[in-house]
Length: 437
Image 1 (spheres, rainbow, N blue to C red):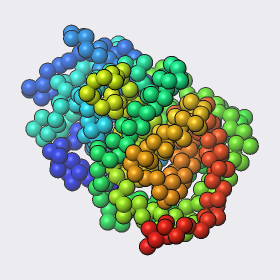
Image 2: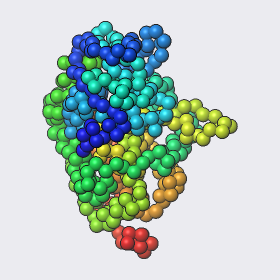
Image 3: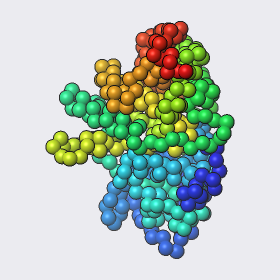
Image 4: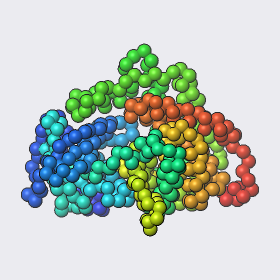
């Protein structure tokens, strides 16, 4: 992440830990003051980077979700060393406490685990990790309260009537506007050669993201061996460790027409960013302090909206909780707030199959955050296309969600068609020209 553990974490009074992941029961020495807490694992979800254990305390019956990072390295992040894993866990605790207050309980040391039988043993949950209460030789998990699944946004988007949908999206718009104006902070410089949000930094990031498209284009319609070597290694490694019962990713058929669409979109996106006015647009966004340390992964499965009462004194957006903020790569969270918004807009559109809702969402957000100017709209148009292309590949290659990935591809293609004028940027209005100088 550009900084070593001492410079990044000791400032927060954290230290690192290490232990190897195994499919056997592992019991490690414990701190003398540490208690053992036994949990029954009722369900697990596996991602390329982590195991999510939905567990119940054997004694208190409290239900929690335990996140354990895995030893792996992929294009988007590295979790090879114990130092990296703990760094990400503590970053996650710090930022998720901002975006989802009272949901994240803290970190706990893994004292022993086994995936057969389904149980795990952890220490007391540490709400505020410090040098004094973290064992430098241990491996730690992130622990949070389990949230009701029926209030998760992707579920809400697919059930209920039109009025409920509009109300939930209105409240969500207010929350995201509040998040981007009140909760996020200016990014912490990690390298004097990197100016977050600059034209040069975004060019490099764009090429990094477009590398995911190369992985998708290498799929072979006539073979189950469709994924990149990197992706196949991850899933094979997980299978050998017996950490889940999923099969290897199913074959995804990406038609020749869809591949041609990806190639065209990739080329046109590069052309858009190279247009001279965009350098001025991006510089203006930096001057306006619109580059922040954002959530970085705003999408429906990370958002909960609890039932709310219109006659209470509580602001509606206080019923929203957003979990699982980016913690593994600063280039994905030190971003323009419009980039943060773009992912959520696209996810809502892909799931509702409606551009009407997202258009209303965008307009309300821009109004609430005072970003209705020409520059903001042009920058958002770029991010919407960039995110749609990137998440086409991520959904298919990493998340094993081909239907959602192809929905993103359709959105990217349609949005590119809607902004054909971006290929040849029109003359700016006199007012906008003045703003850039």
